Length: 139
Image (cartoon, rainbow, N blue to C red; front, side, top):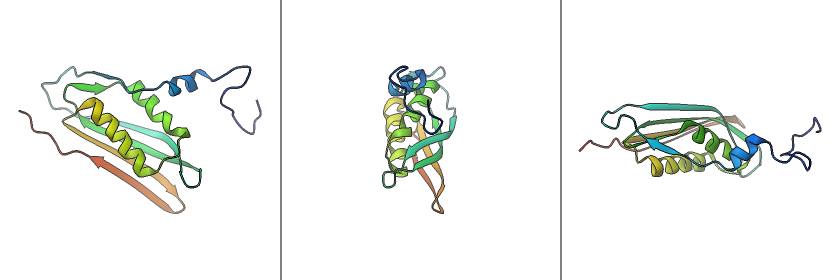
């Protein structure tokens, strides 16, 4: 393999196991072990990447997910692979944060959810996108 560019697999080797796992990624939700209690889960992914839809240059970010679960929690490896699936996608910062929020909200139906995309500066502009729900009242 050339030192200049890492290709996705090759005719001889095919995709690597990580590429296969990312390609098959989907969010997985588990039962909450303590649904009777309000508690907060905070998850941080400091190596998020996607591609700028205008220039094609890579965008780097820290994605933070904070939520108060109801009946479901997100399985962490599935979330990691799902977030890694954005690395080859041309998508805006705003669209990234909103899509992650929508997918998690749909699968979790949490009491509270917040997704923050804290993007590294590029072109002397730093972007932080925050999407959140209001806290749900307990019945």
